[in-house]
Image (tube, rainbow, N blue to C red; front, side):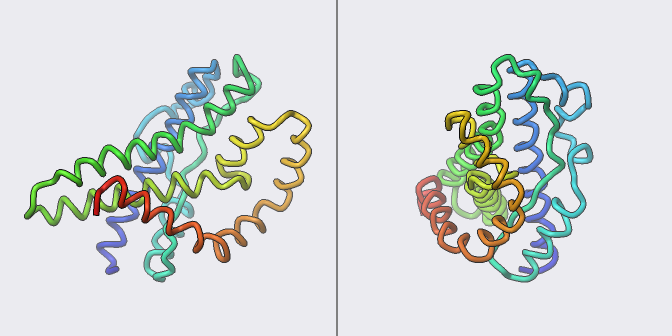
Amino acid sequence: MDLLGSIFYVVILIMSVVIHEVAHGFAALKYGDETALRMGRLTLNPIKHIDIMGSIVIPLALILSGTGIVFGWAKPVPYNPNNLTNRRKGTLAVASAGIFVNVCVAVFFGLILRFLPDGMAGTSAILQAVVFINLVLAIFNLVPIPPLDGSKILFSILPPRFAYYEQVIEQYSIAFLLIFIFFIWRYVAPLIQILYTLIVGN
C-alpha cells in the first residue's frame, strides 16, 4: 500500500475508533455517569479523541510495514463506574457499546457496498475499508485481555469472585496482548474475512 492509501486507511481508522469511544461515553451517560459529558468527550470531533501514538503513528507504521495487522486506539473516554446506577449492567453496557457500534457501522456500509452499482471503484474502495476496519476493531476488542473491552465484558458477566483473576491478568496485560498480537491474531484474522464476506456478499 502506498503512502496516500495508508493515510486514507488511518483517517478511516481514526473516525472508527472515535465512534467506538463516543459509544462508550453515551452508554455510561445512559447509566448515570456524566463524566464524559462534563469533559466534552461526547463529540465526533477527532481532535478531542486522537492519541498521537495510537491513532496515527502505530497504525501508519503497521500499514506501511505490511504486517497484515491494522489496529489503533483513541484516548479512552473517561467514565466513573461508581456513578453507574447499576454497576454490573452499566459496566457491561459501556464495554459492549463500542463493539456494537463498530459492528453496526460495518453492516450498514457493507450493505451499501453489496448493492453499489458497478463502475464506482473509488466509492467501493472507501466502503471496503470502512467495513474491514470496523470489523477488525470489533473482533480485536472482543479479546478478553485488559484493557480491551472483551475483558470488561467477561468479568461483568462472571460472578464477583472472579474479580481477583481480572486483577492478576491486568498486571501482565501488556505481555498477554503482545503474545496475542504476534502469535494468536493470525488464527483469529480469518474470522474477519468470513464476516466481511457474509456482510458484503463477495
